[in-house]
Image 1: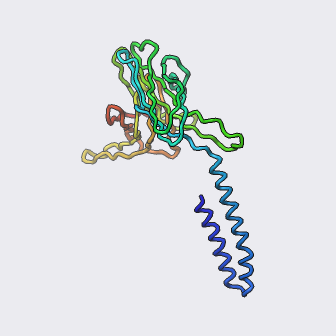
Image 2: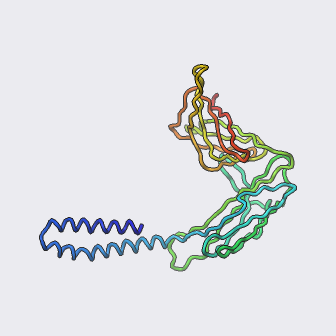
Image 3: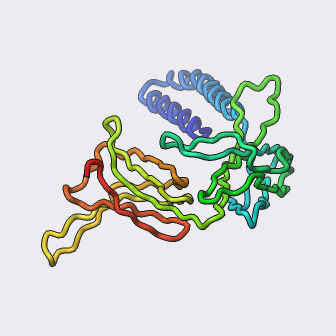
Length: 286
């Protein structure tokens, strides 16, 4: 932004020089009179910019390892490392939530099924804190349980004369508790229409979650002759990680102008924890 201000002032000076070059000798006096005004304008713009930058307090920087935790009846506890990678001391607070997917979106509810300690701690730059996570309830017989551990940076009290925006870092870590019996995911995909908009519906009819990365919806045209090969076209991609919990569903809004040939076979492709997978996609009414 400082560079853009300097370029603006240089452009104004060049315009003045160009105009004065076409005028009489008295133009030099005009230029010298205008130069202090340009200098003051530059100072005001630079001061305003610095004030805007100072009005936003930067967030701390911390990392966690591992990025997800899996518990079970045989392993009811785990440890996690939290490291302060910033250059200032930070305070971190932990909260545990049960995790569900109501109305096609994630829902978090404060829960005491998990214990994460210490719940509040302070880290100096480069310091590491070991957090212990323990399950306080019995595992489910058939279905996997899902939770989220939220780690929030607690910003210090602002100065009395601070009038800006304080920013704080939050990390949300998934915690899964395996069922007593062996449980797997069973994903089904469909293109449906809701409120005049087509959506990609993902339903997990299994008893364990499925994690989808690099998701794409593709169409495969039907063979015109026995010698021709079907052509596969990518219709839609989603680059964020998607979790579909056991017995739950997610929906993704599809672009309004998305189209594919009539009779084309739709397929869902994604990378999971078990490798690359694909599923047939049905269309509403078919």
